[in-house]
Structure formats: structure tokens, C-alpha cells
Image 1 (cartoon, rainbow, N blue to C red):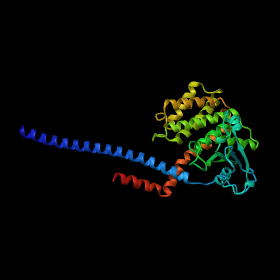
Image 2: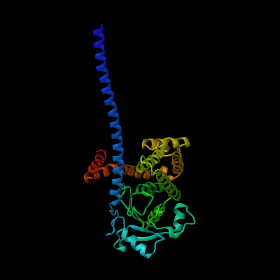
Image 3: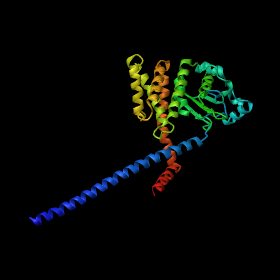
Image 4: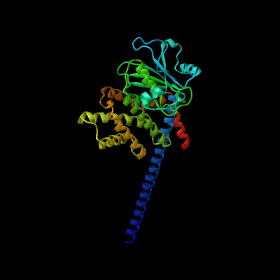
Length: 345
């Protein structure tokens, strides 16, 4: 009996030691997974920062002014009315305009802000940002290049493109520049004036809703600027998704979405792009209010708008993979990984 108890004790002790080893392994594995999660998160933040610097450092001119496009004519340059002669010349240099005979030049003032945006009582002197617009072949989509990202302090190129599509802009290249720091909200006014100078007519209701979209997305981005989990590209994609889904809803049921449907469309888009648990309910309410305004414009019935949104959506999806590949090809990815490794060492 004593021998049996002793054998049992030895076996139980051995079993307990094995359990301890397994438990220790599991704990270490869990810790390792947590550290890897932290590493991946830090890597993502670092990579995003490097991509941002790399992208903004590139100053490639989207519109060629060295020749006159025989198909679409001269690009149209719209200067802010707050610029003096010296600043206008500086803006020409920013747009790489070496021969003014190759472009059509005009300006935007407070009256235009009222016409296109419904903004009354603006001061001409505050209009600093300028744009250059060139029509492109059908199917090209809306492409925006911010020539001076250091001076356009709030609005991103994707936000400009998204709002421009709402307003009725299609298949154009747009350059935006400012000689001094500005928020950039009024730049689209210049785009609208450029298009109308070339014979296109825009719906004032849509240009005003587009401005509301621009201000709403920018405000949400500003509200979440300190949140490392927030990604403005996801917000841009969510806006595209909301507009697409509202159009599809109206096509399917023959009438605009109900208030409940609008809320569901917004929530689904935020869920899809991992924003529902990141942005506040106040921000969500702003998106719902914009969505309701949007579906009451003619944009909701426009196939051209849907085509432009599809083009922009594809561009947004390709941007991240394209920047990732660029970082990898230029050696930035290896440098970031080595940096992370050195932190752990």
C-alpha cells in the first residue's frame, strides 16, 4: 500500500510539473502575442507616418501647362481674390505655369462664395487658396493634387474629390495651392467657377451640400486627430459607401430612404470600415444629417455620380497598397522593421 501511494505521489508530482510547464508556456505565448500586437500596431502607425511624409514630399504636377491640350483646351486657373500681384505670380510658380498663354486665368471672390456655397458676407481678402482645373477623358474620375500640403491645413485631396463628385464634378484633374496657410474649405468654389467658365452648369443645391460634406468630414477628422485608431482614409471610404448605398436604396424601392434606413446605411458603412466604435455618437449624428441632405439632391439619381464614386472608391483602396509597395521598394519597410526590432532589443 505504501509503495502504491509513493508511486502515485511521484506520478502526480510529474503530472503537476508538466501542467506547470504548459501553463508557463501558455502565459509566455499570450505575452508574446500581446507584444506582437503592440509591435504590429506601432509598425502600422510608423508606416502610416512614413507614407504620409513620402506622399507629401512628392511634388509631381498633375496638370501639364507646357503645351495646350488640343482636345480639352487650356487648363483654367482660378486665383483667390485676396492675392496681390506678387502672390499671384508666386501661385503661378507653384502651378508650374511658365507661359500664361497656355492657361485661362480668372479669380473667385465673395460673390462666388454666395453663389456656389450660400455663404454671405465673406471678405474678399480671406480668399487665398487657388486651383487649376483640366477636363479629362470620360472614365478618368476626379483626381486632386494638393501642391502645397504644408499650407492647406485641413482638407485632404480625397475629401476634395469626394465633395466635388457630390457637386456634379466629373472626369477632371484639380491642382490646389496656397501661398500661405489656409484651412482650404473655399477651394472648391474655384473648381465650380472654372467648370462654369468652360460652359458647364452646376446645381447650387448640390454645391452647397458638397460644402456641407467637406466641412462634416473635416470636422470628424479633426475631432479624432489624436486617436491613433482613427484612419481618415476609412472615413473617406465610408462617405463613398453611404452615397452609393443611398442611391441603390432609392433605385430598389423607387423612393428615398426613410430616416431609419438612412441611419442604418450610415451605421453599416461605419461598421464596414471599422469606425463605429471609434468616432463619437455626435460625429455619427453629423454623418446622418449630411446623408439626409445628400439624398434630397439630384446627385442621388445620377448614374454619372455613381460612376465617379466607383472610380474614387477603387482609387482609395489602391492608395494604401500602393504606398505599402512604395515603402517596401524604397527600403522604408525594412528600416521600420529594424527600428521596431531595436526597440525590443
